[in-house]
Amino acid sequence: PTSLFFLLFLFYDAFPEGYMANNEKENHYLLKEWKPENPGFWENKGKSIARRNLWISVACLLLAFCVWMLFSAVAVNLNKVGFNFTTDQLFLLTALPSLSGAILRVPYSFMVPIFGGRRWTIFSTIILVIPCVWLGFAVQNTTTPFGVFIIIALMCGFAGANFASSMGNISFFFPKAKQGSALGVNGGLGNLGVSVMQLIAPLVIFLPIFTFLGVQGVPQADGSLLSLANAAWIWVPLLLIATVAAGMGMNDIASSKASIASQLPVLKRFHLWLLSLLYLTTFGSFIGFSAGFAMLAKTQFPDVNILQLAFFGPFIGALARSAGGVISDKFGGVRVTLINFIFMALFSALLFLTLPGSGEGSFIAFYLVFMGLFLTAGLGSGSTFQMIAVIFRKITIYRVKLHGGTEEQAQREAVTDTAAALGFISAIGAVGGFFIPKAFGSSLALTGSPVGAMKIFLVFYIVCVLVTWLVYGRKSQKK
Figure 1: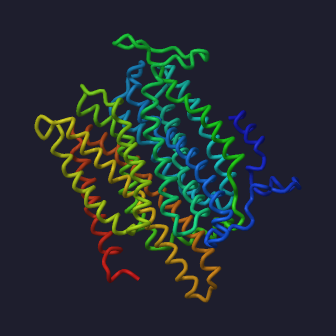
Figure 2 (figure 1 turned 120 degrees about the vertical axis):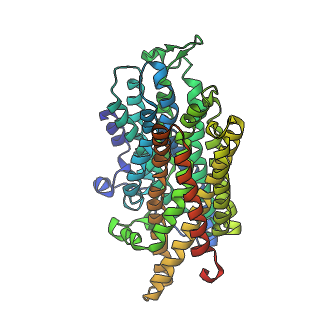
Figure 3 (figure 1 turned 90 degrees about the vertical axis):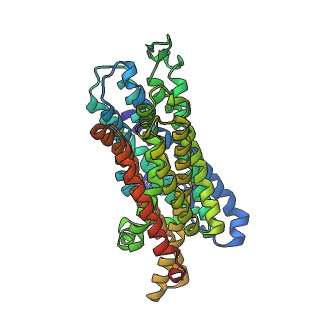
């Protein structure tokens, strides 16, 4: 940790304004005039700056998701390298990063308007080195207590919290007509980190990458050597590169500055809590299934090497999220979300028919239905986020003008309120990443089957179909 804070000191302009007080040089990374709604400004200057910030943000967020879901690949292999944890304990380790990530998203959602997007991206990316390095050491010592793994899993939640600040930051850069697409790309390709991790981790754990650091592989039944530390340490150099890229290529926006007090009023909005339910069901399903799918498949179909196939679900979901934002910009987030929830309920119901407890069971059917759930969870994540941006912008503009505010004031507050709402709602959504794998683990421990947990998920999807239609879908509710 000391060395990391020293590295942060080298990026001295990543700290708040108070630290810059004695530095008289011009801050070339601060955008003092930012008007994305002005067509001339956007085409001549704004577009290129926004896109540069977007792609660096995508890279940092993708790596954050890799770290966030580390235990979904590591937990499956812990007992293979000499540990003796129960199935419920392993499910808990896959669930805890989502729990801490959800909690940390609340303060993270307020950080960009306080510190600036560039500064916060630098800090929030570099600190992810800590759980990666620690986990690499922990898995090499079979006497490491379960409590230590719990702490590391909770620290991986810092990576999940990055989503809230990243999405809020990107919302400042793009005009409202392009926010759905931009947020879809940032969130979708960032979510792709889950798939990237689940694809790369099973490959690198059998390679002699860090032998120069003393990593010794554990012999397996097939004669291979399993070096589980590789799954954690492989991300360290990439995180360092991403930190440098953020420091050199991203910007802060002066007009995005806001105190925590000015952002807190969004918590009083009824629609914030209602949209949180919808996002919990879409993104919560995506991240929860990503965390728990491999462990669940292993318990139901132990003869299948699921780690060779697990990455494909998060891959589909991540790409679908990007598509969900684009499609929602064209057809409307409410319409896309409503149809999507219907399909999520349908796939959830079909899943009961694929399990061994419902007959002989079919892994192929189980896998295909789950890919449908990943697809719809990803699409829904993109469409609900588009709904959030549109609805909160309308609510804020209407409220400000109702109290005599100017158009400029209304637009400025709409940007701040929308960013705060996106961050806070993303925090609620991340809870699904804890609830779903923990529900699977508890259901298996109590009944020997995941059916009990799946019934709860099905009810959630049906409720969201009704809420979306009754509150946002009926023509009488449109304004």
